[in-house]
Length: 132
View 1 (cartoon, rainbow, N blue to C red):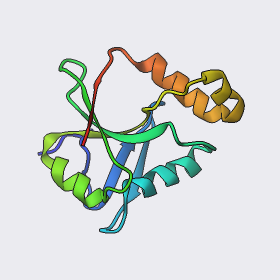
View 2: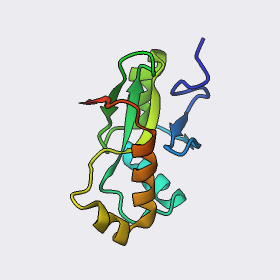
View 3: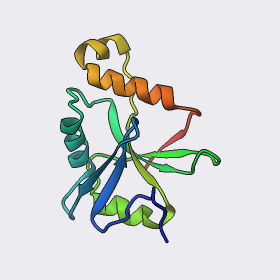
């Protein structure tokens, strides 16, 4: 049986966990890609620049070694879900590419800077980032 925080509870609906504690759900089909979800999140969160953002899969919890897997934008969601369905992973929307100048990010996109700040505040340990 799947836990409440697992990646997929309802067929063809992906839950994405945000840094502020919110959860956004996305219905998908065989043509939906990671990029489609990121674009939708950009609209929902009123972000102007998303070059620093990515979707990642989180394996492990606070009591285990946390490991994040960066998802490539052209990956179909069906591929992501089928590979991770039984592993109890969570899908997160994160800033994965730290801006060279955070003050410039603040000027250009205050919402993105706030998301970065919330993410940095909530980090307890530095997770491993692995590309899949």
